[in-house]
Length: 157
Ligand code: SLL
Image (cartoon, helix red, strand yellow):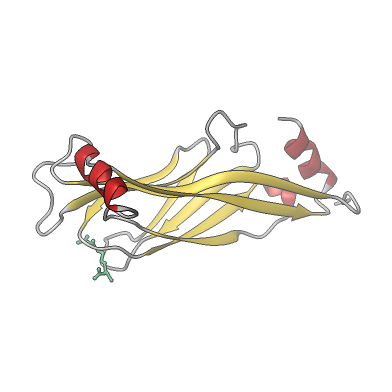
C-alpha cells in the first residue's frame, strides 16, 4: 500500500516493572516455594497520555525459562502487563506488534526486571518502607514513511 513520503511519526510510551516483597495483597498467599518477590512488568501509555492501543495491538513478554509458559502474549485492549512471583531478576524480552495496516515488523525491547531497592540510602529506605520498587523508562517507536492507512490511524487519536 502507499506510503507517506518524507514523514516520520514517533510515539512514546512506558516500559517498566513494579515489585514487592511477599507476602503482598496483589499476589497468591502463600507464594510458590522459594518465591520472595511479586512483580508486574508492563507496557503502558504515559500518565495522562494518549491511548496506545490505536497503534499497538499486541505485546509478547518472554520471561526467564524457569517460568512455565514463559511466553505471555497480551492482545489489545490489554492492559499489556504480566503479574508474577519469583526470586530473581532477569531480562524480560518484549515484542511490540502494530496494527496490521502498518505493515511494520514487530519491534524488540528488553526490560531488565528490578526487584531490589536502588538509589541513595534515602531512596532505598523509602522503597523498603513502602514495600514498592518501581523501575520505568520512557520508550519511543519511530514509524518511518508509514503506510497511508497507518498514518490515518496514528493521527486520528
Ligand atoms: C538469578 N539469573 O539467578 C537469575 C535467574 C530466575 C527467575 C532468575 C522463578 C521461576 C519459577 C524465578 O524467579 N525465576 O519458579 O517459576 O537471579
